[in-house]
Length: 79
Image 1 (cartoon, one colour):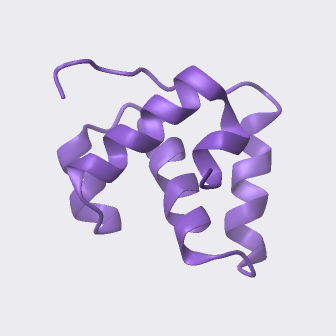
Image 2: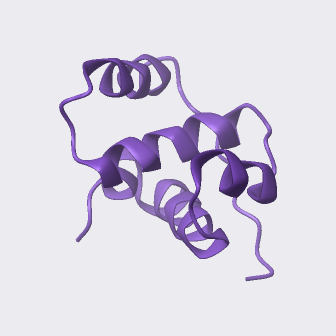
């Protein structure tokens, strides 16, 4: 995992993720992935995100990669 994926959220994506978190009726995986993307967009390191959200570095990497390569929906939902 030596490739770094930089998460940059658009003006539409950030409120969409915040609404997903506020709603609270989503699956836990979707909520954690939304938290990962929001934290990464704020500049948090993988180590900081892993500690705060209690997920593995691999989960963070896969979520960021999916977001950068395939977009928001792919990052939030499994294939």
